[in-house]
Length: 485
Picture (spheres, helix red, strand yellow):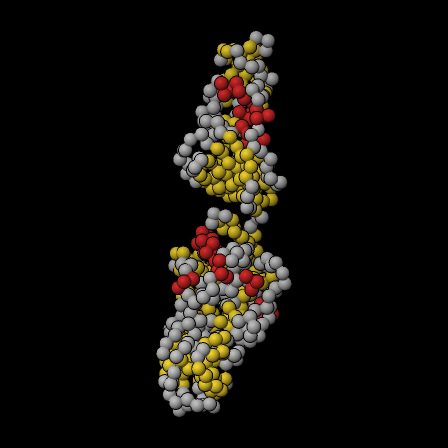
């Protein structure tokens, strides 16, 4: 932001006259005199004679126009005078009052549909000369108690934020001209909304709010398609969880109608039955069945144990371990760790020379798993954003080895719900997950989980993409599909 000083001395030389209404005064002619009255004050000037009330050799007014310096000399203003600077600060138009001394000011903010009025508790005559941004007009009055701004931005949502800064002391006014919010009924108990959240910067969210409906995780591992094409009969479709971009292998828990489609990866998941939703790190029990029906409990992916099942393509196992590669429930290779897990296979790692039971190439090996407690549906995303009305964003608690995607400013997809049980499926304009968490908290969300973000973040409503996109919509592997109640 380039904030530049503006010293508007040219407009306020001694004797500069302004309409009486700018000072909150009414003007009238009475018995050949000019009377200016308001705010408990009365000033009278007799043309050709001079000032009668109060007496004094002050510069003459010009009909209804009064010299600013006369009112200053007469003690009309009860607040100190300050200089004004202005410029652009990101999305905001910023006005800065340079204060003579440090003074406590409580932050103040507000939002109006096309208009707002506020009082700056200082005399700021330079505000009369500010070139307001296109689409915003301002009426400025210099009153005894301060500078009053009456702002108008037809067709816009007008947001203001007034707050102090120190070293040097300043009072800052940020003004935002924002697109209006949107609300559209989709079905009984379901509506589409475009809303602003403030953290304190404005963030626009593209959101479907549902009080009822049927939510399903939809897709096929190994196959990608546009979200709308994965669930063509759905009212609303939000992109789902993470996947390996090379192989379209889902990364994270996916339970479809009680059947485990993909296994946990150590991140928070959405779990639900009917229209009752839960968030958290899933408790998952996994078991491997051996060639003779032997069964042993195993860890899964990031939840390592003595015996660990791996389901995501890439390097698996550690030095000192062995790897059994399994495809279609048959051991196809026994390798030293680390080994490369190809797509379409899974692997069992175990201490070198100590498998859970004797293994040979061609042996049958099966992986089973279930949620505890069981849920009919689940889809892993992460990280967790909100939990029971509290900010919960802490990716260190989840299996995010590379923090860079969570620090990048990008569109964010999320699922959330209010304390009253209204479900939100949403995509934000570009931001970070931490900022999104604060935005959702400010809007009244009770729980919230980030789903896949960046180019995958998409909200489709009745087959049309409603969230903004900088390019062609991206095919994904899984979606959350909301069907009409």
